[in-house]
Image 1 (cartoon, rainbow, N blue to C red):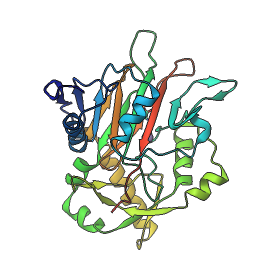
Image 2: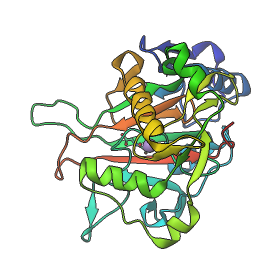
Image 3: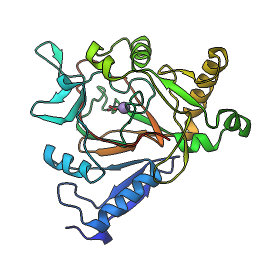
Image 4: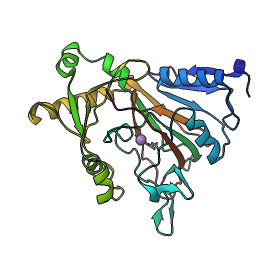
Length: 293
Ligand code: OGA
Ligand code: MN
């Protein structure tokens, strides 16, 4: 058990994100410490803990405090023997990537083309790439979908209130291929599990009740009851607005970081500014969520 008094929440000063200090995730968290962490998570959308040294079991146990852990459909990208741990990595072994090499390389929120997307995703940084001069590479940029919603023009909010947009997994993968050239194999089994799904354009956060922009350019192929000629420019406009730097926090990784994000209140982008020889390895555990409303 850890003393509650040692836990502190340090907001990044950006539109979202906070560092949690004084917590060792290798130990069991008492109820009060967990409550503070969960509260910071709901409030800040992204939280991170530096300098952690945890086992696979400890990362899974921490994730379970937030809900049921999901088993990713990309089983070939999971840690052997641990289907709860998805490897996000550019490392190749025996001629193939050990995990997902293209994860997050276009703006998105995780698995939003699913009927019931995850509440949160938790990344544990095992290897972080750097340039020859020591500059850290492979940052992740987060954007507050809640702050972006609140800053929309009232006419735009009114025009889109109550509307639903269609999310397509295939469209997302095609957009990603176009943007970064690489992509995982999209299997017929995977496609069968992810038929296009409609979600609210503005999603209500299940805990805070805040309204969040839940539209992703590329993945969203239309808005129900609206002609594409009107819907597609609106989707593009929402996207451009959401990724405005004033809504962002950019995380510069260190080995030992445990960082988690809220898949309702933010979107994120993996910055692919490193090459094949610069190894990056993240262990991701994902927690199930609720149907967007
Ligand atoms: C993910 C993801 C970002 C990164 O794992 O869902 O988007 O920087 N990762 O690895
Ligand atoms: Mn992601």
